[in-house]
Image (cartoon, rainbow, N blue to C red; front, side, top):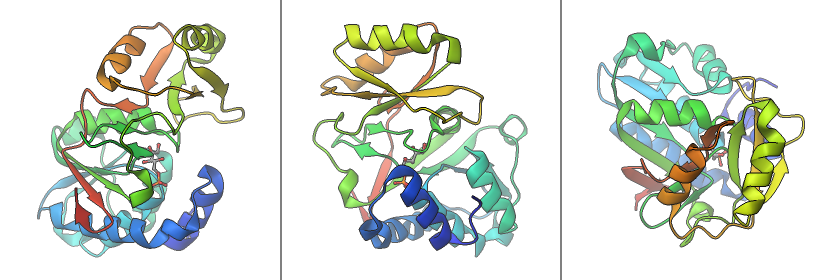
Length: 233
Ligand code: 5RP
């Protein structure tokens, strides 16, 4: 379903990701607060999700002052285009100054779990291409230890069982997100049961496994700024 506006989008996202509607206000505040990081003439890296949908809505008011956006998903692309914000290709846009995205969990070191919306691969690419990563969350996403939210992993379809066994060896319980195909044509495994004391080490280790495209741990390159509602962490 395509968004008609941020609220419609939020409803759709809430159903798809099981997001409590009670957090809509803080998501909106975070999305709108991120506008202060948008500079005139910039190309903005844009993430995915219901919090980002509020950011995109607010960005539309500034569309004549920016060059455009590099999008991390078909979902965000559709919303950006609908609001008349030019969507640019990362290869031609070059390095970006700023990336705005949500998260499923955020620890005190600004390390994240992402990928609840299955857009983790393009999100990680755009984050890596950006000088500053501003993460926008509601307070429910703050944790001391990452892992209560299952870690999404994008896998090449033929490697699903192989990766599942590798996860079990590492103490996780893999659950295939049945029916979900990513924008890149791949599948998602959600890993339950990990209490992640060293997220950067786990991210590096999993990155080595053939068949894994992207691990939804953003620890090697954490966020630079985290906005919880309108407050900076
Ligand atoms: C999508 C993501 C989102 O940023 C994450 O799922 C948070 O979404 P929301 O803002 O809807 O709570 O990583 O892949």
